[in-house]
Length: 277
Image 1 (cartoon, rainbow, N blue to C red):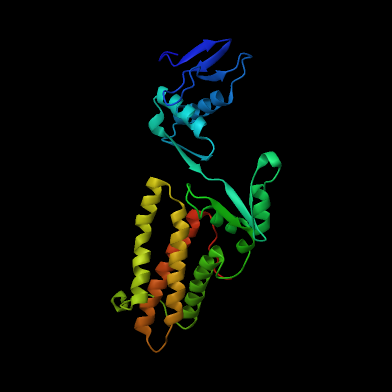
Image 2 (image 1 turned 120 degrees about the vertical axis):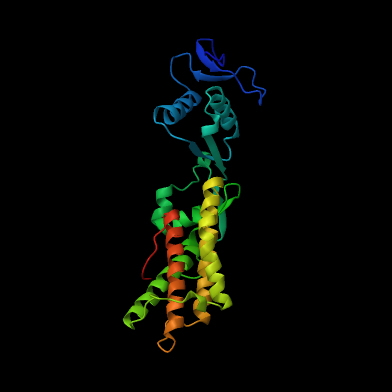
């Protein structure tokens, strides 16, 4: 009110509309019956988070059909001096692919799946991974059949299997009395080895970029690329070789680094990194 952004009309409390829209009457914050409107509640929640609870920033994940509400909230946060702490990421809606048919979720036609139903059908790991595969501005088509396949076509299975395969290699090496201590990484000169090194070294930079731009989908892309490079390396190279201990040590150090990168990537996604599969 002190800023002249809030006024009374017809017994209700109104917020002055943003110049970005043609809505001359503004927006109701408190109805004439004294009950707060949806916008009023949302503003109060964000003020509580940013001022009372001391949050540095509030990042909301909204559906792509909330553009008008975003205009309202940005106007309110601007008036309150909180706009720099308020960010919204708009996500496209999900379609489910079932038996080869795409089904768009529509609440008004009672055609939708609850998240708990998806988790029950495909598991927590697949649910998290598949939902995070697409960028915010891209339509997400969730393939329910693919999500439960134990095959290389299923990306979460493919990535988790890479982690489990490395764990198996390390167990085999331990049984044969070979470890990575004293590894001479200068011995890693093969293209497949160097490709893995470059991918592992890219991980910190990737995380920094995601922290700044919120492109969480890049984690799934990276995990799939790293897993693919490792599977190719494993196909073409012998890691544990008692006749070439120095090279084995170097390759063990390499696959350990790959395993750490995979584990951390899956951890950021909230997906498990199994030791056996």
